[in-house]
Image (tube, rainbow, N blue to C red; front, side):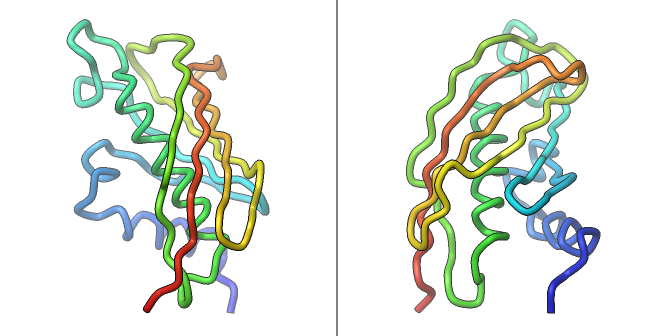
Length: 140
């Protein structure tokens, strides 16, 4: 049985309870056949000392949405997903509002996946571009 979009996003919200995603207030907000979008508020929780979005928080957002994208597109009864490498290029700073991370697949293999995550601000300016490699491992 395939879940509705609303039910899938609700399950994502529940999966984030008591995790880094909840701490950073990361929320999965939309997905389609080959993408997933999450958002994170930019506030003092995610600032670096000079009051702008910390690159580490951006990388955490990117890894969260990319790993979750891999997760929702595999058979989770048989496999679990782990991130194995992430790279991030930060292009612009943000002081307030939200940042949005859209993960799309570059490669969707049976074992390894490669995703591009574009992080944008409320005005759709490109803030960071990230690449994430994930691996699907069999559950024992």
